[in-house]
Amino acid sequence: MGLSKESIIECLRESYGESVTSAEIKAFCNMNDFNYQTITNKLTDYKVGRGKWNLEVTKETVQELEVSYSAPAALPAIEQNLIPQKDDTFVSFGNFSDVKKIIKSGFFYPTFITGLSGNGKTFSVEQACAQLGRELIRVNITVETDEDDLIGGFRLVNGETVWHNGPVIEALQRGAVLLLDEIDLASNKILCLQSILEGKGVFLKKIGKWVSPAEGFQVFATANTKGKGSDDGRFIGTNVLNEAFLERFPVTFEQEYPSTATEQKILGKLCKDEEFCKRLADWADIIRKTFYDGGIEEIISTRRLVHIVKAYSIFNDKAKAIQVCVNRFDDETKQAFLELYDKVDVDFVMPVDETPTI
Image 1: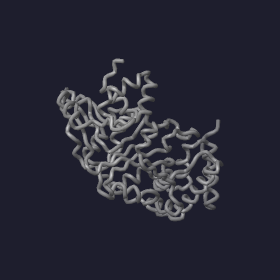
Image 2: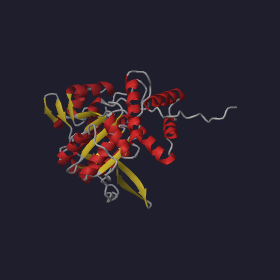
Image 3: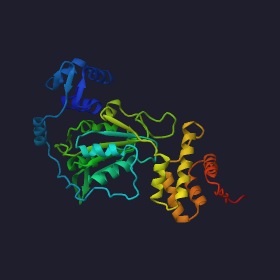
Image 4: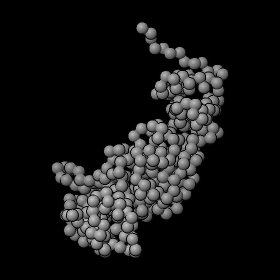
């Protein structure tokens, strides 16, 4: 086997993190047809106990690596203020106070927030940062997101190849809050964040530089699932995330939709018609209860209700506002939603289908 000690360590770190056990090394050997004794002999310097190894890069190792590397200069860090603006329409609910406490505590405590779409997961993290005056760097995750997108890579600038920090490194160095949005869309390439989720630094092997987290650095991840995929097919594209990766989030918050009273308050920030806001909130509550009981396959989110009141402010027509905002659903679901709204608003006139017949 021609695998070097450095390659073995890198592979193990990507799969299991910096702390590995004999069971994990055996699994690694079985998957790759390696000899267990040969692998453990190469890891002698990293053994910390019986059946335990710590693969953390030491300061001495970092110094040696940095001396041996020669790379183009890095681009300067982003200088603009990354503190989100306070949104006057924001209404606190759900896990917001706990999210705020975690950020304010100063403890590194990676937090996973899961819940159905459009219920304020991302908005709550953003507004917690805004209220606390903390910088926020948001990364929208997709199945194509890789190490270069997150950590950084070489870019061509003015004819020269230079290193460009990715958003994760920017957040590390600034002590900012890092938000990994839609994390359950990620592939296993996200495992490059293992050591970072342990509150440790990361070695940028392409430029030979060790980056330690600055004070205040924090990580939040949002998802529609719990990282186990979408069994009902509702969230197509979500993936089953590596268990070792999920284990590095010590706490998971389950974000529910707000109560009808809270939702009415949210809509009231955007619409002066209190009765319309109340009816919309009641309508959404009925739809959600029907959804949870298995009566329908779609749901009206808080975000969708906000779309409706904004459409109402544009068209000044309640029926049209509702219709254009539920047009994205299939015809059967759309009709069911409109009929349910008709039950909470006796003055509602069902919109007429103006599609010409041939």
